[in-house]
Structure formats: structure tokens, C-alpha cells
Amino acid sequence: MNKADLIDVVARSSGLSKTKVDEVIGSTITCIIKSVSEGDNVQLVGFGTFGAGNRAARDGRNPRTGEVIKIPASTTVKFTAGKAFKDAVNKRK
Image (cartoon, rainbow, N blue to C red; front, side, top):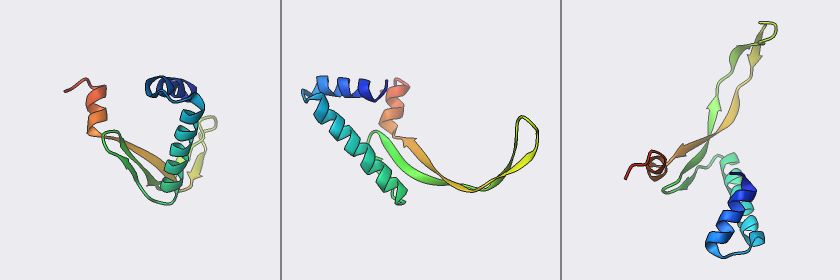
């Protein structure tokens, strides 16, 4: 499912227009990105938590030449699924 499919499904199930649903989903994604980039976690109870994590600097290898390269430290995005989400995926009650 891509964003357009999600908009269609939400519009049908909520009775809202696709334009309005697109605005709401777009605003939601923008708010999550802004909060996580500022160092905050975004917790959606029953769904999961978005947050930032740190990845340490490390040595890697160029797969073509085998040459050792330095990979710099970076910040990454983490998503931890909530219990209800995990249970639904695993078909538990």
C-alpha cells in the first residue's frame, strides 16, 4: 500500500474527501518528522513510537574493491511497534 492507496481507504472509511484526508495525512507526517528531528519521540498508543537513534562511526568495506572505508557517525530514525500492532500482525487476541 502506498500513500495514494492509504488516502483512498481512509477517505472511504471516514466519509471525508480525498483532498482533506491527503492534507491530514501530510500534516501528520510533517509533524512526526519535525518532532523526531528535534529529538522528541512521537508515541501513538496502540500503534508505536517514532524516535531518533544514534549510529556510531565504524569501518566498512567497498564491496567492489574490498577497500576499508570509514563510515561516519549518524542519526537514524527508529520505529518501535506497539503491543496492539504486534498482536494484530501476529493474529493474537
